[in-house]
Image (cartoon, rainbow, N blue to C red; front, top):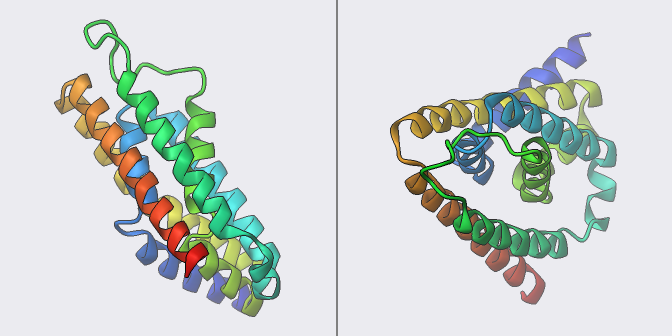
Length: 193
């Protein structure tokens, strides 16, 4: 039990700090301005639990087998496409920014999974999972990322009540396209370097 608690505490702290200012926080904030809080939170929890379950399961020895640079390049293209799709929006006079779309939960879950594949926090979890109690690492890492991203979710929900829907849409578009460009540049450098 001591090993479990130590692994959970270490993983929570490392992942929580590692997520501060990370792209998943920016995404969580943007999603919270567009979707219902329950969909955003559920999507974050599902994506995070899946990601860290896979990370811990893989362990450090198999970490090099994943083509993370190609995954990151595909994610970059999807983020840019999602940003452009967000830009088209709907008629701002008729739609409240929190109106739920049928795909809110799936959009949040899928986007977070794609953004975090091969990210530093996933790599931290792979390393920690190979050295410490895997269940403790999984629980601590999941809780750490969800806690960090919830800060952004509540900030995004607050922003959506204070800012016009068109402005929220433009900010969301800029964030998604910006994240896509950053992911694409990172993947390109890794693939060519």
